[in-house]
Length: 313
Image (cartoon, rainbow, N blue to C red; front, side, top):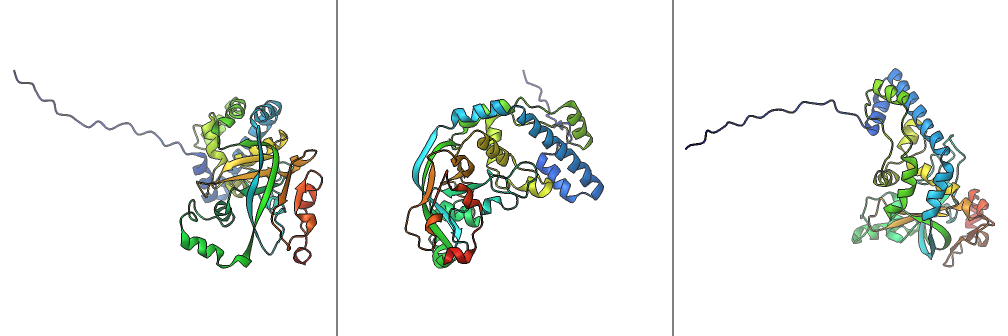
């Protein structure tokens, strides 16, 4: 008995309207006319303000969650590269300029009091890639690149810093973000914001729900886009702020420019009333003696810009 062959027919799937992402809306913000631009700006500022206020209401829970996993102490040598014309390796003045750094908020933001960080790397390769924004892995195994980097050593200063930091959170372990994520995942957009977003064409307004999502935003290579588009801190900068509130002194995090390396953001304000310290290890004649050690007694002085001539003399 022969089987009747059935001809297969392609049945197209219904086309659904693509839901724009936050990044796409921010791009739309840049490209839109003044009227649409203002609508998006009003929405984002109100929405991010709502999220900030909601997190502040949970500040005690946030501090407890972060403190519970800030159990890493550091006593080791790390690398920092600075422009020689500044000649002040422990200065945190640069981290306070404009939007700030990945885990600190600079003077350019008006949403909370600025706070400083000292950023160091695990080795020279990572420090160079971070300082000069080379792509991931560019320096490692690339002899020509390394030679080029060392051709003009007068352009920059490489220093080894001895870190003695008592209380750090290590973001190389994603699980350390679980408790924090659990607290903030309870924050949901209100119906008012959902309707507002829908009017703008964004139908799926949601907040971070998993520690994996949070991890990716903290290591976003373009973390400053919120500052340039909306004058708002990034997720990573807010995370640094909550670490500051929790008394955490250091944030250990993978380098986004060198996959084999990692960095430490030292929240210098939290050195106060502790035994933690940072010191230049090698003899560095160009640096005055009173600028070679940072600790809980003198960290405020490193927020002050010292005239270059005074340093180099």
